[in-house]
Length: 231
Image (cartoon, rainbow, N blue to C red; front, top):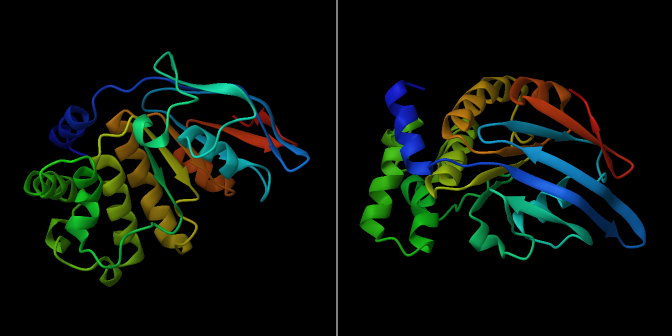
């Protein structure tokens, strides 16, 4: 990313700080799924969360996003407790493995969607979305339907949509699992560079250790409901 593009992103996203989970626990039925989880993610840092299927990775991400409450413990951002704050007020961006793009909208309106939902004027929302698409090299595709794009292009649209709403943190749930190996490798470095430039604390859920090592400054693993430091 050029210095000018970096400054543009930082001006849009502002300065974000620490995301924290403190003594967070959750059950799945009668089973203790998460046990006394403590985790800090700094501004511009990507922390990878690994573990086998069913270990609680997506549950932990949902708790951070505000989609469910923890059984015990709390979530903090910038020194403020946000455990009871609803997801739409947290201003965290959650990006899924299936991209969750709207097939009936073109690329531009997919990226502008969140801004329109925030009651921004549609013309201004589209102008801002077009600026973001230009950063990702996708401005020429603005009027295309998303299903006409390649998998890598769709993934870039999904990240552009996540960033354009000025999120305070980014939560990634297996973001590359739907892509082939070569495309995953090409996109990991690009995503890491853009996330670090945006200055957001980012939590990356993945089952792929090589992906975690390619993107994350730190990694932890969920084992029997508890976090173990990997590096």
